[in-house]
Amino acid sequence: MSTKDPSRGLLVSPIRNGTVIDHITAGEALNVLRILGITGSTRECLSIATNVESKRMRKKDIVKIENWELRTEEVDRIALLAPQAKINIIRDYRVVEMKGVEIPKVLKGVVRCPNPGCITNTNEPVESTFEVLPKGLHCLYCDWLIKDDIANHII
Amino acid sequence: MYHIISIRDFERRDLDYLLDRAQEFDTGDYRPGILDDKLVALLFFEPSTRTRMSFATAMARLGGRSISVDSVEASSIVKGETLADTIRVVSGYADAIVLRHPKEGAARLASEFASVPVINAGDGAGQHPSQTLLDLYTIRQSMPIDGIDVGLLGDLRYGRTAHSLALALSLYGVTLHTIAPRGLEMPANIALELRERGMEVVEHPNVEEAIRELDVLYVTRIQRERFPDSASYYNVASSYRITADLLAAVKDHLMILHPLPRAGEIDPAVDRTPYARYFEQARNGVPIRMALLHEVMK
Image (cartoon, rainbow over all chains, first blue to last red; front, side, top):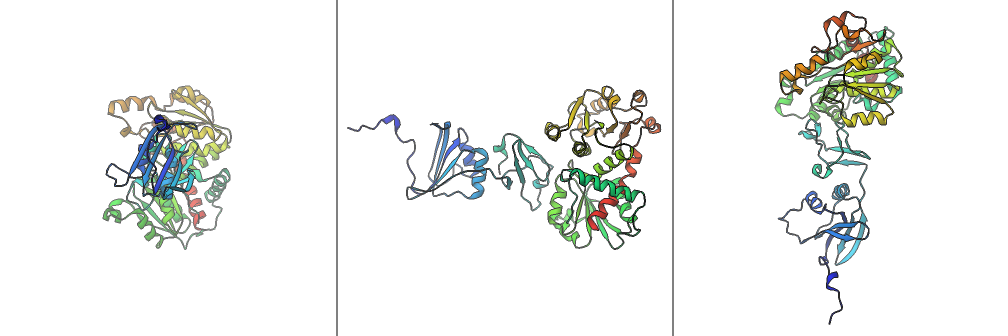
């Protein structure tokens, strides 16, 4: 007879190769998937856990994506939504790389400027560029300040 | 390479230096023909009378010449050319570019693609640094800027001249008095930035309450298109009109400024009072732009 406590079973199974994004701010997992461009039609095996109990964060979200390794610009985007997130790169069931996320000082091509009059919202060959300030994101072209609801402006 | 894009890029000493240089040009203290081998391109993709003419006048007074595009219709923009390409091409023709464009951040973009200096002559609701410099210059002609009380009256939400001037004045220990119709108040993030820069910002419900404290009253146009209908515009506009009667108990040295054009905010009767300095202010566009053109091309 098994002594394993069924109430402590695995929420999602381990993945062989891919990425586990842990310690996502509770409720932001779907936004993380959105900014990674992962939709319902993705072919990869995808596991999402939301509002999981966490000692450090009380509640957190977790995303596991098979056969997917994050690029730097994707990490920047995640940092905006979930600054405490931890990214684990898995190869053959082993964690080969574990890193935190860090919001860069300047975000290029990550956030769309909400100002319709901004030159970055035209056909000009420039990327949106925001400096990250304590009070929000400051557009270096038009001086617009994004103070909240940053997820909605991520490209 | 020296671009003039935003008043945010300037420190106090940069502003003072340019104001000093403008004064030298104003008093004729410069070598005639000092830019006689230079050519400036005036790219105006938005209507402008005084800014374009004063840049052309300034260049002519320095002995240089100007080439210009006066409208979008007359440019390759209608063929779908980007501003970036236009700037790269014109960089090959001229020694500097003066740009007026309807999009905010256009001058910053232009400076990234230009191989010659760019001067921002207004980008949408964004920055217009030469206007701010001539505003400062006009104040400084009458009084030291440090520590004075300046009132900003009118559309403080969309008015780029008011924002730029407020940012510049924050470098001079000025107390700012804001008087704006409901809905056209200064955006909270700009007021916060001014306070973070150490500026005292005082909001007033009407001009009558503030005007006796002021050394300078800076009036901006209340734009009709910001209101849902003509009646609400006239209702607001009439309550923000400067009349000679209103000036009965002001400080003797009060100066009233306006970036012009005006649309009824200042009664023409005020023009005849010693407080009216807006035409002098407009004239000061020439020495300021002489200083800027010389600075980027010397």
